[in-house]
Length: 133
Image 1: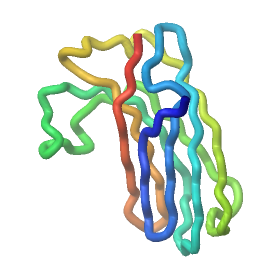
Image 2 (image 1 turned 135 degrees about the horizontal axis):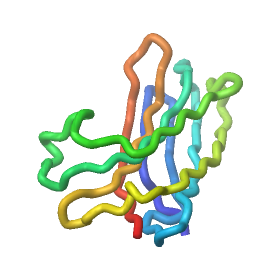
Image 3 (image 1 turned 90 degrees about the horizontal axis):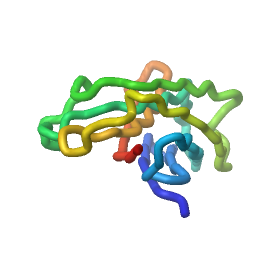
C-alpha cells in the first residue's frame, strides 16, 4: 500500500511524493517515487531535494518556519530534460536511515520534505511525517 506524503502545485505543474511505507522498522530503507505531472505548465523545475528532518513537537503548525527542524539527510535529484510535457514523470528514490533517525516520538517527529527548485522563482515545498524504529 502506498502512503501519500506531499503535494506541491506550481501553476499547472504538480509534484507528488509517495513513499512505500510511512512507518518503517529499524533497518528498513525509505523507498518512494516522485511523480511530476507537467499538465499545461510553463514552469520548469531545476531540481528537487528530499530532506529528512527532526522537528521538536513543541512547535505548533502556525509557528513553523523552515528553520524549525534539523536536517538529518538531504538528497538532490537533478532532472534531465524538460518537465513541460503533458506527461507524468516518475522518479524513484531510496534513502538509507542511520542512527540519527531514532527519535523520542514524544519529544520530536521525523519529517520528509520535498522541495521543487524553480529557476529564478520561488522554491516550493511540502512535507509529511514518517516513523522509524
